[in-house]
Amino acid sequence: MTHTVEKIGGTSMSRVNALRDTLFIGDREGDDLYGRVFVVSAFGGITNLLLEHKKSGKPGVYAQFASADTDHGWHEALDRVADAMIEAHGAVLDNSADKERADDFVRDRIEGARNCLIDLQRLCSYGHFRLGEHMLQIRELLSGLGEAHSAFATVLLLQRAGVNARLVDLSGWRDEGNVTLEERIEAAMAGVDPATEMPIVTGYAQCAEGLMREFDRGYSEVTFSKLAALTGAHEAIIHKEFHLSSADPKLVGQDAVRKLGRTNYDVADQLSNMGMEAIHPKAAKTLRQADVPLRVTNAFEPHDPGTLIDDQPADEAAVEIVTGLDIIALEVFEQDMVGVKGYDAEILDTLTRHDVRIVSKVSNANTITHYVDSSLKAMRRVEKDLAAKYPSAEVRSRTLSLASVIGRDLRGLSVLTRGLQAIADAGFESIGATQGPRNVDVQFILDRDDLKPAIKALHSAFIEDEARKLPRVA
Image 1 (tube, rainbow, N blue to C red):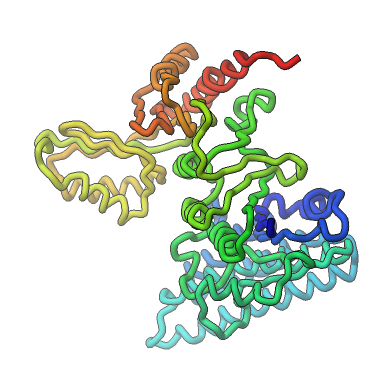
Image 2: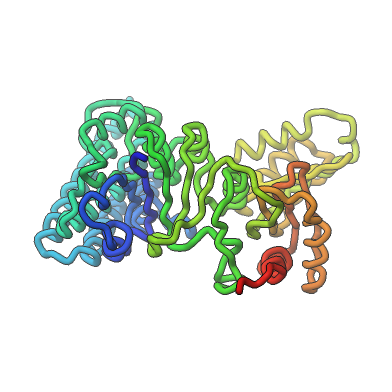
């Protein structure tokens, strides 16, 4: 058995002092503290301030810098980041000397980034240089500040507690090299011995590929998975603030949900498609190909094994999770579509051009309907383009929701029939439903207002009722 590579998310990082007493140390002593490599995200909310708010879209430093290259509004945004960083590590560090070191670290990184952006503005005031050509690098520079800060503060916290913690900064700060992700990780880990020290690794890694080009804010899971694969970890672990459960406990009730315990990467992919990522699909692919199993745990329950995700099939057919999301149905009706090729290809091209994510689709002789995860603003642009391409077609969008019943093996469970009945018994109507031949998920299309009660009804039918049928243990 070698080491594990373990990732901690931003919300949990904001309580890293509590994790010191449970996850990092807990009841471990001596050599038992080691054999673990931790990949950390920025403290909660910091990346939102650096880039833009993930949900509301409120502009951060990057968004303000991008919108006006001569406006100094981004300076104030960068000041707010510095204040938030100092507040974040001040809440978790107990020692005044550690706080001063962390304050100095923040000032050095923030002012370094500020000078870089000022110099870039000055350079791009000349006609030969275009600011737009450098925006991806700016986004990566800013994003890396968050992980470097949280990793540095965590190392201070652990060293003060007697742990031989070591900062592994992959952010490429003031680095002149242009290396690949693999080269970046291998060089940083070359002198590290996880058996005798605890590496704290930044979730962001600067590399020639540019992680944010493809993964944007999902980059930390890519770093995490690549690190686990390259270093030969016997297990990759993601620590969340909750267990991977059969449904959202806030929706169906804490007492009603069931921890998954065991599932596979196929189910993890279905969850990603529903916007409920256990892990980014590309990161899952890296682990799967390296034959590294993934475990998802509750960071604040370190003795609970959580849920193991691997390639193994289920021992028996069962529903494992019920989830859902709001969607928009894009419907293209063309009476003359039947027998004519090319309609779907053009629709797909338009959706791709407007960066619209497809969740599911159905079609018949003269209608193609894509269920997408997008804003109404983006869909209006899609509709306009398709209407111009097919002037005789009826193109319309409709806000709906999609509930999904997921499991490694749903064969013989009559999920489609029983699901429709459960929704009807709860007083609602499914507008549509789809089930593929692989028997890994069944999707129910609903009005937006009906999603939450429908999930509760489906969870009751497939999870809670099944649990009640199990024999009681004396």
